[in-house]
Image 1 (cartoon, rainbow, N blue to C red):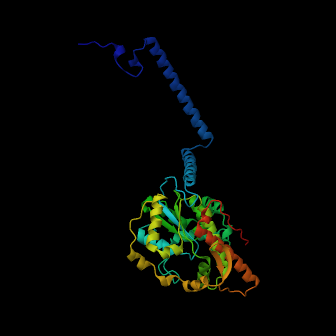
Image 2 (cartoon, helix red, strand yellow):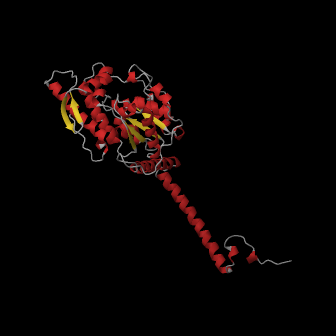
Image 3 (cartoon, rainbow, N blue to C red):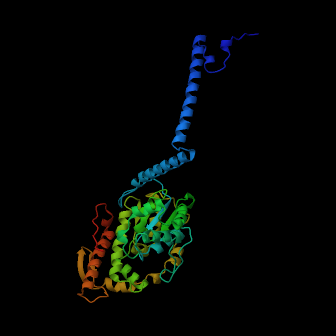
Length: 392
């Protein structure tokens, strides 16, 4: 039988290392001293924690806070990699949803409906129901609309008044501190942050104003679809819907909403269209938008493919209010040529020509038309575009 010496019986990492006995004894003594020191350190640390009210719970809370800060930094890094101009692509970050931006009465409901029903984007619910001024539905989540109203109301703002004074940072601080009621927003946020709902679509014209607040609380930056409509058509539509809403007020809002939409979405991947483009070729334009959202903004494709039958059912030419009146005015006398191919034509004003109110209304119309023509040419989407300053 083979004999095994004690030094060859492995009893631990050091014993099996064939070291001289004297060294083994020194190492054992050193290990004993280390254990004693570690015990003393643990005792001192325990007393320090008790003296400074440091508990496991407080450490977890501190860790959670640090995690939230890291998440904000990650969002900021992701958001900065999205495009800032019409012709550039994002940097390959996949997004889970798209936000529709556009002024009230600009065809956002029609386009959202085409993308939801024809392409298969997920809008969730409950939704605001159809109404006399939008027979096919608004495709707006009730909870998000109510939360946007809450954000605005907290700053003494209404969708049709004082929107230029909205402070996205203030709204976010009120959300973080719990000063503002976020019960409705929490429902919408749960849907928008759930990847199972990809690709989702969120639509509410107020998003033009409140977008930057939402960007801070969404898990990932969304893609953007921006659409616009002729400013006088919008002003006339508001005038009809809101019982004599002044044309002047409608023109001012058209400028402010569209300006806010472009400015607030500058860091995101965007696809641009217009109400006229959708109406001219609804099938081709809707499919182009969906394709570009996937190829350019990396939004996962919808579950459906648009068909002409869906177009015929969804788009009713009779629902395009004010078209006859606008056709008449588009052929009216030219009041002023703003730039080549862009003119102001005679229109039916609520005020007497030459009055102070008429001059103020006409001045706003000129500003709105200049922006409209820059949308048409694409100049308004450039980073260095100069937006007009408006007095209250």
